[in-house]
Length: 336
Image 1 (tube, rainbow, N blue to C red):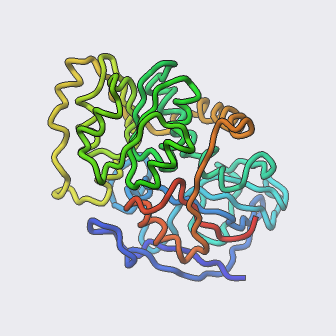
Image 2 (cartoon, rainbow, N blue to C red):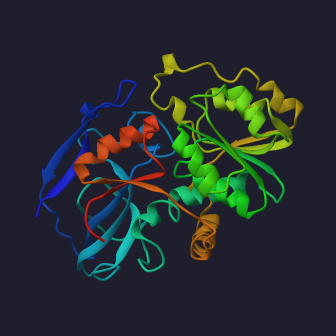
């Protein structure tokens, strides 16, 4: 057996390029006493990883050059040296972009392959789904009848945001970057309104999609979309700042100007708050039960993009940053 890994070869100078990654092969590690050997089944690809490629202070440390990238994984215990879980157990947690890794089990949780497909524990029942739930319930305090708008609405987080809103009795609108994605939002997920921000005037489209204004905005994009939303916020609106993928690849000197209309927040008593999902552990646990129940009842749908093989992980990551994927992006390394 060999252990293929994706290493950080260099830090991006703006846009991420293939040369920032290196495919390497190492020996399969042996678990020490109290450890387990995990075979990675699925690896997650998430926008927040872009920030970790920079050597800057943040809520998580940066990736190190010459070391494997880290991401959420679902893996199978294939060897245990007195470890926490027996062989054959499926676990999810923060792992490596690698075929194999050893762990003592800290930070990993067992998952049930009979409850949902394994990849869902990286998506709808994993961090993206938890992020949607935390942002709406813990930050924005969404309630029945609210006018909800979400950017990147067909993405890993956005598609869950919209469906939570519909299940809670809200008017839901969103923006996405292709006509196929808009059709998916309206025809399959039940969004009340959705528009393609690449082909429409973003200010007019945002206004038209939210005729009663916006009570809750779930922010995934930043840039012009945020400015357009601010103009349409209602009094006492709440904005949950999840991410701003539109500027992740920009160098500091190339950042677009900030919203010119921030004064609107003052006059309309708007609350705008950033958040990190794992600062809300109780809501994360609650979501697994709520989300699994909705999946079983048919009240929650989820779409994924699946890349095959670890060597294709860098391309999948760059596709996410450019909005080329559809739904949650994962990489499959082995069979379920």
